[in-house]
Length: 102
Image (cartoon, rainbow, N blue to C red; front, top):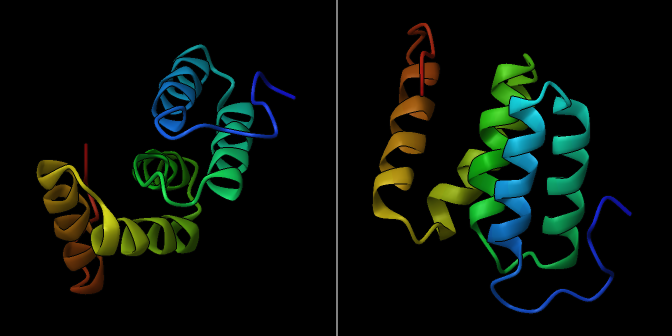
């Protein structure tokens, strides 16, 4: 199951998110997305995965899913800097800017 157990403890999503980003760096973006989607389904209260999902969706051209992930993250995210970045991307996207984002 891509290294994700069915029962996740609080705090386990961030390591899963980091492992997913490593998969992305290795060129396996689809598997990275699948792992993060499972993580948020199993532990939706762990918000950091939404941030990483937004990044991956944006990079793969799935703008609508990136928007949905980052809108959710902006509402519940705990990392103020990441929330600010997601908010800025959403605002630039909504104003028609190029949507460039780290």
